[in-house]
Amino acid sequence: MSLPAAAEVGPGGEDAVLATKLHVPRPHEAFVPRPRLVELLDAGSPGRIAVVCAPAGFGKSALLADWARRRPTPVAWLSLDEADNDPARFWRHVIAALDRAHPGTAARLGPLLGPPAPSSFTGLVTALVNQLAESEPPPAGTALILDDFHVIESAQVVDSFAYLVEHRPAALGLLVGSRMDPPLPLARLRVRGELTEVRAEQLRFTAEESAALLRGALGTDLPAGDVAALTARTEGWAAGLQLAGLSLRGETDPARFVANFSGSHRFVLDYLTEEVIARQPAQVTEFLLQTSPLDQLSGPLCDAVTGRSDGQQMLERLERDNLFLVPLDDVRGWWRYHHLFADLLRARLLHQYPDRVAHLHAAASDWYEEHGHAEAAVQHAFAARASDRAAELIERHADRMLLRSEGMTIQRWLSALPAATVSTRPRLLLVQARLALLSGRTEEAESALAAAEQVVAAQARAAGPAGPVDDYQPSVAPGASLLVDHRAGPGLPRRVARRRRGGGRVRGQGPVVHSGA
Image 1: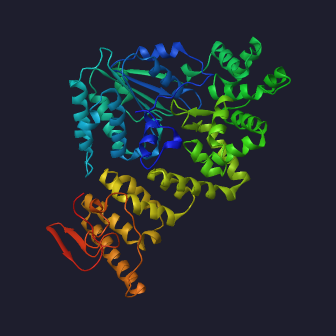
Image 2: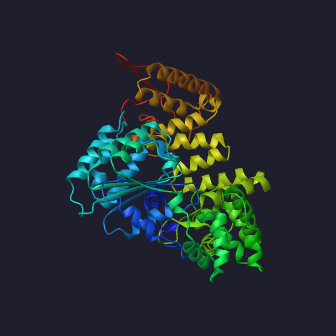
Image 3: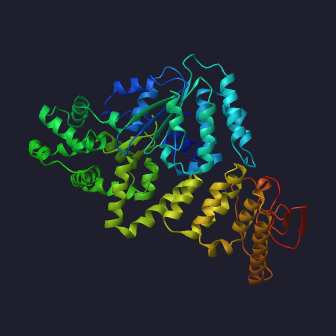
């Protein structure tokens, strides 16, 4: 699934953003191949588990991507983010990644995700294992790579993935990139000889690798003594070496710079980032700060946030200048900043321009909503501290999320809203009731429905004979919506459907919650 150019992303653009999660990152021009580490990973495949674990900036993703590009056999890649703590979303994305290596996987297994979402994902994983075992991959098998696994905190996701680890077919290799040990049965896998581990000690750059990286950054060779000193003082830390190379570009006395270069990773990064940013033209610095709140970057999105019209050109310039920009596709449509670089840019933005942060997030939310990316739109609305805007987006997209069995994501959003906001919006109360019903919490559902009835009645009294004005537009067709009155068309529904332990009944005048998905 190739990623369309960012400028062409329309209402169906959510698939394009998903494509960036499934895309094996391409190497930067200054990328340094590290065959010794690729060989280490090769020794652990197929059918084994490989864990690449080290702090940020050690080159974990670059190594996994290089290994994947060299593989002659199918590779399924998934870059994880915090939203993947919803188990339905996590497994939908895993299945989408594997569908690239084994077409038809999504068509066969997708329906098992619901709606309604399964209470346990063991059945889904079992079906996945059986399908992979019955397929006919090349002799070397298939590899599934999950990058940034450290963002996963959901016990349900961890447990279901651990089940795949324990019951994986012989032809499936699993590779996990993480900043910390993933909560998997590593000790048991280690004892059984099924675990390959690449940690910070192996990821540290050697003097030869450091020389190649600095040569790529400077366009010339540094004296061997300077390379050795920088390698020792960064302890082979890739991010520190890269920042040192950027700082040395404008340095008139490289030897003095190298001699004064010292400190821990974090302090080195802080200092050198200041040096790097301070040496950029004002328009570049401004662009970096204004776009730092974005997790993913495209030309049109940057234009919407910055108010400029040169977003695509600026991104391509930053990539050429090796300013910690990571490409997410092969067509120069999407990028992201290196995580550490983004953190420091955001800290600087908050320190220098605290009043701009909410505006930048609000602009990003509007762009994502306009281009069909509901999850990102809600995320930026929360970051902008725009509770009403977030509530409106949740109402608009709740139908689609429920039909995708991603109720856990909706619940997380509702929990982030002020209670007063939820209590005054009938549709949010209906969504609460729906989630409660799906989990068997009938008393909680009854309470939410009763509150929704009261709010609707109060709104009707306040509006008078004309009735309340409602321009609600669901994210699905009205006939499939859980929050639309099917008799009166879009607008607040007129009846409440209630499910009790002994069955269901309907009473009163108020909103509708349909019992089926």
